[in-house]
Image 1: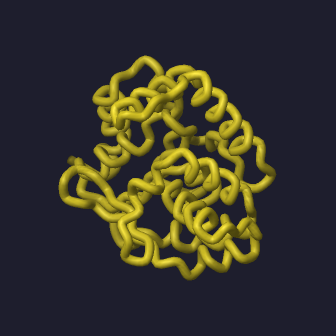
Image 2: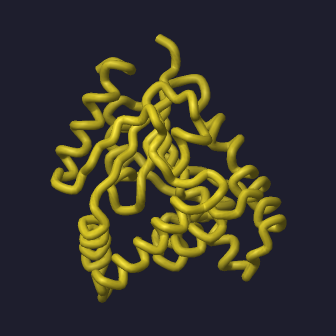
Length: 223
């Protein structure tokens, strides 16, 4: 059986990460959260105070980044050997990541890493432009989405579980701004590929979302 490439795109809070982690573990395939690469560059930008696209693109080309299965059901992000998983999930890092992701120089610098990730076997990538730019010829393309209100509520619950005081309205406003920036940029906008299967998770539990995607993947990779 030839290697199958699965591209999953969609906005923040739709459940891409949780669904893709579960699918990757179910079928024992490499998984890359491509958004985490941009978050890594965003973190480098914050730490250095640098927002120059050319300099950030050079940093992106040489950064030592690893996204790996931690063996406990989770995936960890490592930058230069440092576990930066928690830092990458912070709101400030996400905001900066959205800014650097709008820079064509940075996106171009990270393309090769994404395209060759897990080469040689089945693999799954999620992000904003995997099915349209990174793998336009992917074997399966999925656009995972949910209503803005539902996505904001999910993010608020996630932050509250960590003990953070949050405003659902503020999260909703930030998500709407990020959606507009990601879908409206000239280079590699976040849009559903014409041949993608749209999965709306607004009224689905996480388990139902996972099973719906598993049903799409299983005929291609086997059980």
